Image (cartoon, rainbow, N blue to C red; front, side, top):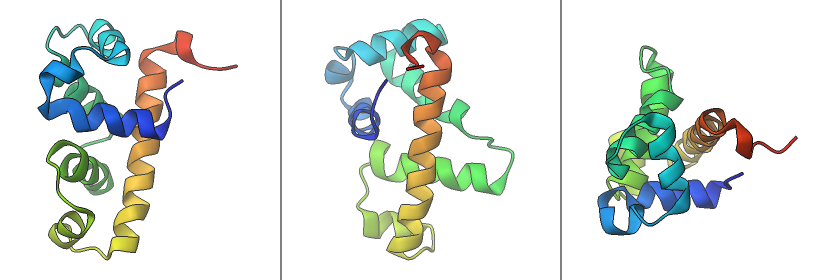
Length: 113
């Protein structure tokens, strides 16, 4: 089962496809999503983690994309989302939990009983 640090490392590598392609978790995500391109598979996983039809789902996704995919600092992301850093970290914690759950949902064999 991946940890939040594993999830963050995975997301940070979206812009580094040569590193992303070598991660064992990414190979499993590609197989589970049916996508051959690792970056597209990870972004599809992130999109599937949230209900993008709701404002909260879009905000949670935005917190992940701004920091982990786009590389913004906490302050930059919080300012862009009109949040205090503390509020931003609350969103981010919920978002990480959602991505972690999406990974577990894709790969049920990895779940620890």
